[in-house]
Image 1: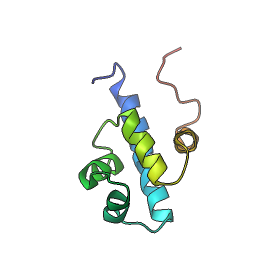
Image 2 (image 1 turned 180 degrees about the horizontal axis):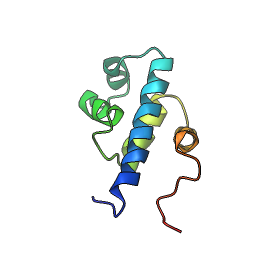
Image 3 (image 1 turned 30 degrees about the horizontal axis):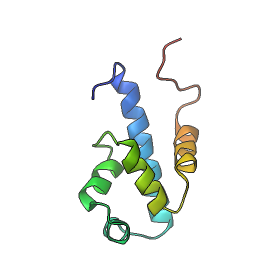
Image 4 (image 1 turned 60 degrees about the vertical axis):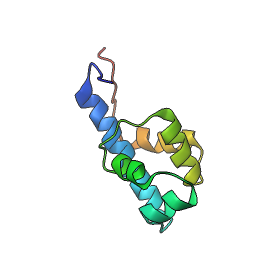
Length: 91
């Protein structure tokens, strides 16, 4: 799916990628371990951590559960790491 503002979308996806990787590394888990423990495709997890894929909500939800955090907490971390006053909508 293409977004009207793909540059801003890319910022969100890259930020999400960094947050997922940071949270996984905080737990001292490799991609393989996290993927195997929670039946997540390692390739999907890798692509999300590298910002290659535009994640589906179900993927974000699954990964947040695998990281033992509510999806709202994961997204809050993403929001906190975005540039100040970031918005997809031009005002």
